[in-house]
Image 1 (spheres, rainbow, N blue to C red):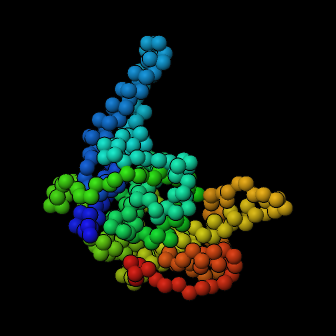
Image 2: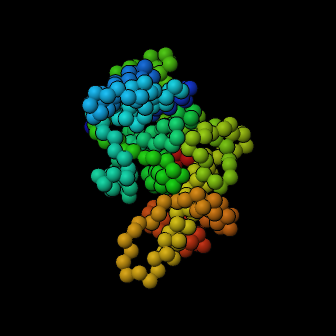
Length: 318
């Protein structure tokens, strides 16, 4: 039986400048495999190939596009998805948009995958399974944030509903990082045990309102009087995500009542549903815990937040 990868440690990089694309790639690979210089070189190579293709297509005419800036890296250091794809292809990993037909099954069973890339505007981060457990490796967070399998699906739905682009990563991931943990202090990031990551996350979270925390916003310092804040925060996030989903589902059923066949799928959570979710939660004290099963979630939908059911606490959030 194989042991845990990297000795059971988690590799995490905290945000530096606008290098979230570098942090995203390295946390997918679980090690300091690439630097900003490496990705810049890949971006330059892509730019050169794109310009050559455009010249060939235009019959050798050197238009203004030759003098334009890079389309694959910004002056601030942000990289395109093509650069991330090229970097991961070095390790025989494939990046696939979640709305691609070949990724259809992952929309319903995301826990069957190994990693997801999330992108909105100029921020990238990854969600990755390491040694059997899912973690959010957002570089704006001080440590990887543990995600239960049930909460993973709700969290991805919440991101999609907020306009994030989601990509899945497939292939054989590196088992061990070639750079030892003792070298990680040289600007490469940090190696943490799962217990260390949990302790850091709990110490930096604070209880907030029922609106899900923006994935691009890092946790803030927590007061000593709130030791269970991370568990409460996760419950609040999930409650809001489910409430938004229920609103969309109700609208969908109303629009399609009387039809013999329903051919369209339930739409993603919209900004309107998200804003109304807070009022729904204020009228109901029920909580769907991140570790609750699919049956409880369905029961929760059928009763439209009007009935309660018991749930157990996630061991990682106690």
